[in-house]
Length: 409
Image 1 (cartoon, rainbow, N blue to C red):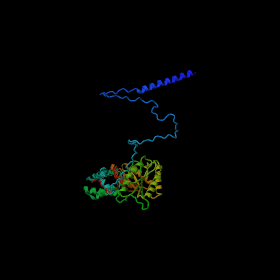
Image 2: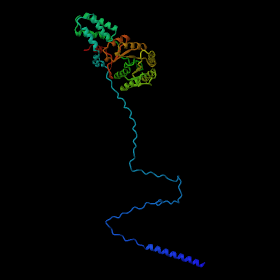
Image 3: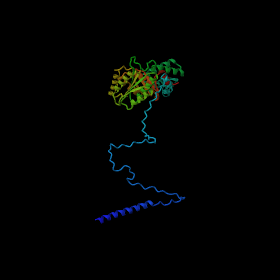
Image 4: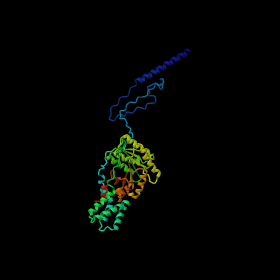
């Protein structure tokens, strides 16, 4: 037993001695001598990629932290400029319409006389040519009658004019061109009626605004006439509220509102197909609240053969009069329709009390005699005439300027 123990001790001692020798030899090993510098540069290789776990600084045996203990990293402010995201531009609001200054109404028909005379000269020149004949026999007087009838003067006014002309010519005897022109002008002026009150009534005499209702058949230019009348009133220094009671014609309210915006007049309107009487009622109500001078009500252009629709026009009149009495009911007629316009005028006069006539498109016809015929038919004067498509081509009717345009210069 002792021998075995001794052998183990000897083996341990020998292993230790051998290990010391190995360690000593490693310490004594020297580095190789440095090489002399050369012209060729030394290329240093990059270190090898680290293995997984080599760079870890926290030992793996540290206790794990809960999610509550972990702080989120704080974002450091970037040195670069912030990125601006372009947002879609909001649509620009349509610019407010520019308020126009209407042309003054004083003498407007006189300024438009040349335009009127171009289309009306046929009547005046025809009469002057016939009257200038040396012998005025029955055939000549029949031609004069035909000329007047063709111009839509009407049967009764034509007979009256011819009789007066025959008497005057017989008394006058020898006729110079200047005398004939003066004679014809005098008789035509008497036929047109220079003494009729042609002022558009826009003053109620009460605390309420003047109320004007515009009626007429579709296609006569009724809505356009209402807008142009607003310009006439604004040019005379009046404030206007428009009532778009024509709810059955597409875009009629838009058309009227456009006319109003051009002169700064407010438009009261309702839904398409709505009750016209209700809108007319609201327009008068707004006109009273705003302290306006005049309320213009554009009504639907009914076909005069539809009795039910015409009854509704009477309803509009009755509803408006709950606020204040109507001061003016203007009937718009197309001068080019001739005698058919008289049929329309009669039917409208039965429904509402027409107080004045507006003749549109008078510059597009040589039948200026409709002025005389419609006045005789209704017993009311022509108060306004339309002489073109321009915004200021609606003019107060002036008998002298009209007759001068008929017979020419």
